[in-house]
Picture 1 (cartoon, one colour):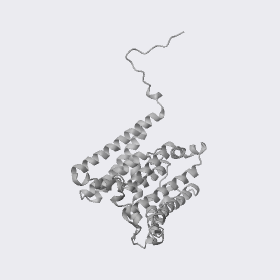
Picture 2 (tube, helix red, strand yellow; picture 1 turned 60 degrees about the horizontal axis):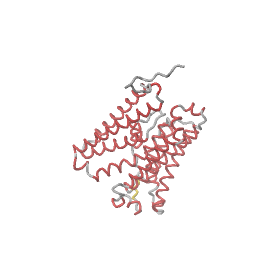
Picture 3 (cartoon, rainbow, N blue to C red; picture 1 turned 180 degrees about the horizontal axis):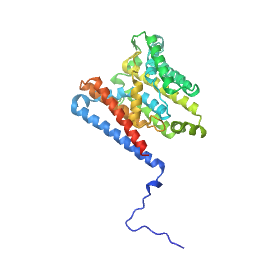
Picture 4 (cartoon, rainbow, N blue to C red; picture 1 turned 90 degrees about the vertical axis):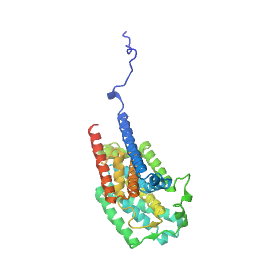
Length: 338
């Protein structure tokens, strides 16, 4: 009988690259993307610390950056799920505006904290339901369906407010925006954002719902043949996006103390951009909550640095555009090498 040959002394038994499981390469690339984003964020912190050390590194300013990023961050979590499934939602900013003004009407404010929160979430879910039904069961292209929702929600928000700002009078809402409500120096809005992020990560990476989302985005027909109800999954995803918009609207009400029809302006572009630079494929099939959150923090930090240095907003938009283009080019290069 032939005896197995032992490897030479001093050698190491390495598994050939071709024999490594498929997920090994995905994890490695994900780690590289995450480290790259952390590097960019660290570089921005250094730039802010050098240009405006007293203002940027002040605890109040850092709390402000996190607070401002929390609103768009919650929207981005929902957007990440939609894009991962191969869809798009252009209506998130308009839904935030509609939910915020509907929840701050005098009739709604009579019910206090619970009434404002319930209305914000309900309006977000309602808009998400309409989007989901039009796309999943109506056969409409996501771009067109959500574009129609964008126009309709903005118009309805303007009609409700008549172009005026609706001031929040509920003390329980206003108190959440005060420093006295901070827990260990962390604003309540940031804690809500953290909870939404953790839940979003768990759902996308540790549940059947998340696996179905990735499968639908990778190949909808193959997912259908595998037994996944693609239409119902898409409906759920737009409901999820609407829910995130409703939560974001409530956070924005706390942050601004008012409801305006201009709320959420360009949120759709910021959320899409944050998800893309975070590593979520615009074509679907891959999404990362951690990357999307880092994308939000990068954009929010850029905005803060530009504001502290009194730089023009047009330069800020150019910088954001350059980052988006670079991220897409990196995605295409990564896709071509896999």
